[in-house]
Amino acid sequence: MSAEASKPDASPKNVPDWVRAEKFVDVLKESVKGFSKIKSFKVNSGSAAGENYSTVMLRLNIDVELEDGAVKSVSYMLKVPHQMEMFQAMMEHTKSIFDIERNMYNIHVPEMEQMYRNAGVDIKFGAQAYTVKGAETEYLLLEDLAPRGFKNSNRLEGLDQVHTEAALRKLSMWHAASAVRVANKGVYPDQLMVGFYKEENRVMISEMNKQMAQNFLKCCATYEGNEEYIEKVRALQPKLNDELFKKANMDANEFNALNHGDCWSNNMMFSHDSFGKIKETYLVDFQLPKFGSVAQDLYYFLLSSTKFEDKLTKFDYYIKFYHENLSENLRLLKYPKVVPTLRDIHLSLFKHGIWGFITATTVMSGILLDPTEVANIENFLSDSAEGNEFKTLLYSNARYRKHIQAVLPWLHNRGALEI
Picture 1 (cartoon, helix red, strand yellow):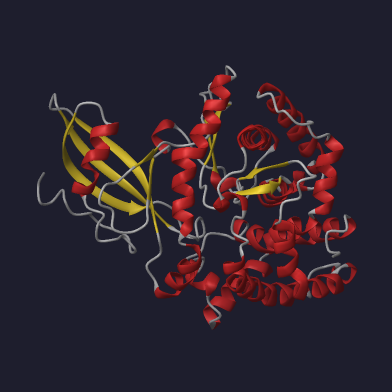
Picture 2 (tube, rainbow, N blue to C red; picture 1 turned 60 degrees about the vertical axis):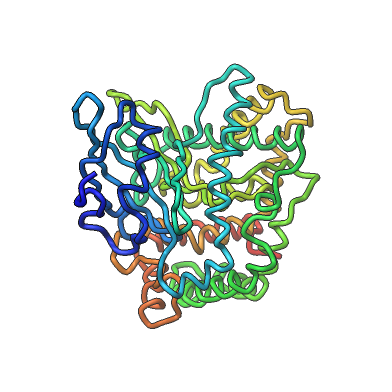
């Protein structure tokens, strides 16, 4: 290996010092048939501004020489923590997210895939994960799905019906397998049963929600038709944190499954054939799974990631479509309990309406924001002038106003603003 190959080229910021070519030799031996040596090693940013907040995503582009002398280009996606001091303090509370995601890729997702194979269905939920020996920070290394034709949809436009149905079909398979797993083998480890809303995170979550709420309420007062719901929105704020923790507690009388936890369009990748028909749907980013009511994933996905014209008009249809697929998969995997009815799913959605509100007033705003360099984790977490300016932009831009002015009255009419 040459000295030049051992150093990353034109690296973006936040690349840990240990990310050097020699650390990835074992991975290349495992994943590249006939691997001989590394010719070049480059590290590039793996996501644009506004596409990813919680971690740093890097793309490793590596030219390798094979045993027959041929040169092959390969790439991987590397997820590492933010290096800045502000986020390091937060990571003291959430550093387990890398451990959780590693366990998802290495243990829990393969287990669900095997359940389907045992039932005669060969499926994959997502990318292949790899182990890097001697990594000096938390990390996750995954295959780069782009060379296989996988890509994200346009988050600003939202998913059309065909892509929404494909995503719901895969999500129903995920939910079904996890529910059957728990029914047959017992509960998942605590990190999946409790999830992000655990007591040691309460202060941090409260502070984050408080900062977002301040800026949201300021903008909400300017929304057309706000007089219908603004007083309820204001009254909800002091109770919001306690209500989220309350709803995060699993109710054993409901149908429960492992929620993806961050189920939006950028965490789904689609591949298409030459005619544009969807061939495969993969889920990515398993940092925030939580076993509980499927209302969390359904609100999160359908409110954040569907196109404006379908978001509310097809909501009930999408729930019916999801339920049909969920029921089919539960029966395929021989779910030993009573399969939930469509009414059961709707009752759960009404009961857990707070997930709809928190989706609409947090993640939906980031998804609908035009690409901008100010869309970064520093401004998301900071109470500085720049941070508040960014959060005001989240809630005041024309695209978000269009969506929220439709979604808030809809949530209000469903009783989601009542505690």
